[in-house]
Length: 364
Image: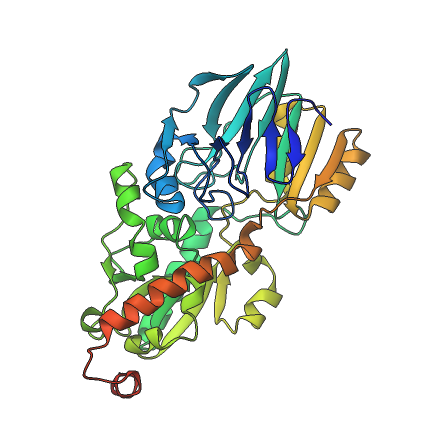
């Protein structure tokens, strides 16, 4: 195992710089790759992250926590280690952590994807000796279609639902995926409504210069006239809840890499699915790893065993690393817990106090 980075009970630790990367327990100094809740956890004494993601990380770890932003490519000296952050192409502000000390370079990629995304900066390949990669979709069956084709299908589905008088509901993780879906939508087709859990993150994107179509936070008042015409972007936790009643008859879909195969669609009782992921597919992972020129690769979460076996057969030193990172599928319970609170708040706001939920649902 490289001396630059070590796996501890708190996460990846760099002894030369005395800091952790995405620690899953409180530490003195944390470097955070991005603001998803399994990577940005509260309780540490100080945080360093990419400048573009500072506000999102701040929201995750709490307003009282000191969060410092670093420009992409800017280098800081932490103890005996030179550290810089580079785009990971995952969500707004996502970064890979490049660590250099005593002539050795290690890159901890966090979550990443290698295809274009209008809501964040593109993945940057970095040469290193050791590369810590995710492996969420490390199976050859996961190969993403071009984003343009995915949105052609999504728009066609939206129009078909309009012809049938159904409201289109797309479930997407509230931070990152929802904004990517929004960025690709054609607002000329119909109104776009969003769940409160999605809406809370939109100002961060618009302030960063990301172009998004006009949206409204879904309320009882604006949902009723938009029935049968609108598309609604909501977190997966909104499925099968009273919150949906206001939209009338709906057709449901999910945007996730797991929609590549039929099983997840059936289990969720979705009408359709769109395989849009913020993680690298099989080819993306192999291409990114090759571009680093790394002699040693550590694979975390997802199908790490498959990736390690394939890399080993190619002559690389590779090993699977057990971490607390949970990936796209497993991250949903975390997102669900957060969004459930937003759901309760939303329903409380949307339903007048003199009505019972049952009466409102019947009226809708």
